[in-house]
Image (cartoon, rainbow, N blue to C red; front, top):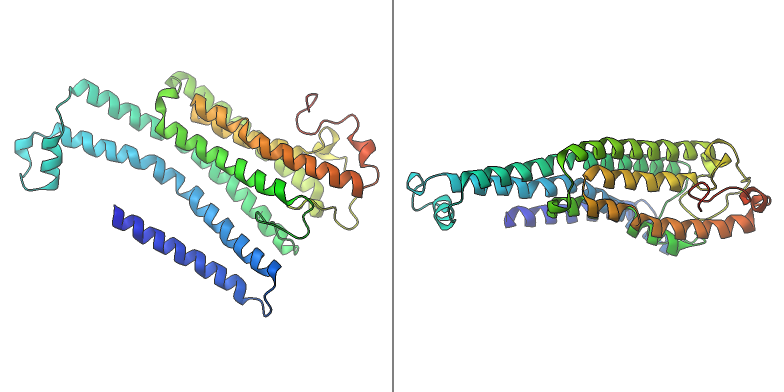
Length: 306
């Protein structure tokens, strides 16, 4: 296992190094902005690798537990004394078959129920990646590190540290602390409800992105020729795309069926979203005429609340 981890880590580092070198080699003159953009691209790839590793990491403890349980059920005299499996089996204390079946069943069910929220997280990440590619085709770069054009770079870093990690922490919590999960009957309802909430969030965010069109960017910066948009979801909310983002994470936490995971996915993304909205409000109020009148009577994130 350690050899596999070392090989995998070396392979990942090599891939990221190639991506970084490719980004730098595509420019004849290297400026600070180009270097930042290159590291930003490598950072996005690293985030993608991390998200893709969530599901195998969640399932790995279950496979290990099943292997150990199977060894415990094999009589010691049936295993060669010189093998590693024989030493592992003889070193384990015997347990009752009912306890073994119950533990193995609980672990297996706990891991299976995390496949849905993990898949939901993959879907959200894929859609965000598609939007990044769309913006880059228009000559824009979404940076998680810094940007000379961003009026509030601190908020985008805070959003990056609270949005994706909320879902990853929720999945890890549900996998490592199954005792905080609810019963199977209620878990099914949570899975359906979480899928519906995340679907609503995805639909709302994509609707907001489509409505803004070329004015939707990853930076706090008013675009040339930008005007106040009051159609689509912007008729009711000033920042419906962030409402969609928040709903996506809430749905993922709900689908885990774990109380701690739900508690993580609700407030944690809100920290970065609130900071980002406040930064955008300052920029839009200053740069766009009529935004002050538009903002009156419309909530920022949640209708009738804030």
